[in-house]
Image 1 (cartoon, helix red, strand yellow):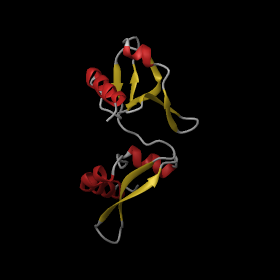
Image 2: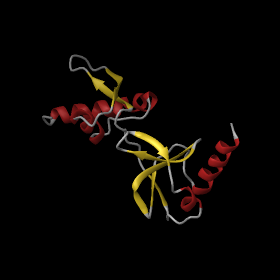
Image 3: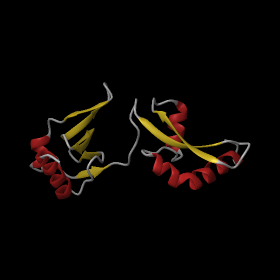
Image 4: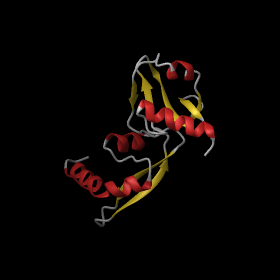
Length: 140
């Protein structure tokens, strides 16, 4: 671990933010930020990648207000995991897909069937299967 990573871990601790968690600032909620081992970064929607933030000084000086951690949501071009179910059996499996804001991507997100890691999806399999079966019974 290099010195800059140690510093950013300390900053996370001081602001009560998890390293890598996405958040917005009270006075600048237009951009989603995170702290990584590279420092403060923001998500650039146009090129679908994290970039170095120009707000480091204001952030460290506390001039951006409170920090609001966001729930994870997938980014265009990035992998996510979901639970799938075959109607011929009661078995569910975890699969992955690249997020491209398709209708099925948005539907999975809306019903809570969109996960950052395979482990999270595995842990949620029973709940998701129950939710899928309920939706099918309601005609969806």
